[in-house]
Amino acid sequence: MKVLAVDTTSARESVALAVDGVLVGEVRLRTVDAHSRRVLPAIAFLLEAAGVAARDVEAYAVVVGPGSFTGVRVGLSTIQGLALAAGRPCLGVSTLDVLAATIEGEAPALVAMVDATRGEQVFAAVYDAAARPREGPLTEAADVLAARLSGPVAFAGDGAEQYRERILAARPDALFPSCSLYLAGPLALLAGPRLAAGEGTPPGALRPLYLRAADIRPSGR
Image 1 (cartoon, one colour):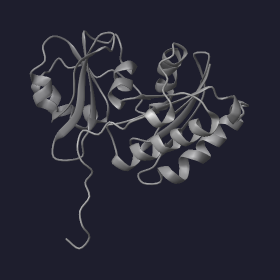
Image 2: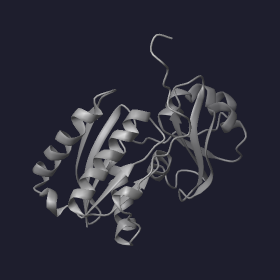
Image 3: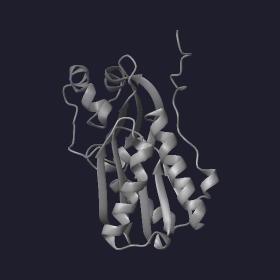
Image 4: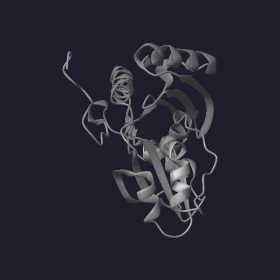
């Protein structure tokens, strides 16, 4: 199965293509507010480089948040448009689930953390060693969450990087396995078996995962 995956939930934008469980290409970009201008050219470049026609993509996957409010919307609308035009199924996966999958097996407990960019809180979820959800998603201070967990724990995500010192102060035995924060590649590999098993949904059924309201203020105030 040919799966095209997109992640625009953070400044680390990426698109990836997996064919029959093998990652054949990935494009990584650093951008803060240009997702809408860059994601489609990145997809076109990736498909051309891989020698795959757009019509031959069999399914689509997208990271649905939490993350940048605008970025989440751009990723969802892009995948919905492509999948709707092609009549292909989609799979939406949370940022936290993809992060947990990148450190599967590193410890009995895994914590995925995304920087909430407000105060000292993170968006987070707790998983078992096989990256199966145990708690969350939730919004909490990184060190508070770390302190209340027991046993060996591995942390991943930009929230874990941002608050690494606080986490270590709360629990010196915390683990920080090496993992990429560009998520389209891991998503493409994660989504392939699920889509092949029939877990895909119509494009219109995709929904964002927001853990708070958008930070929108009236102009002039």
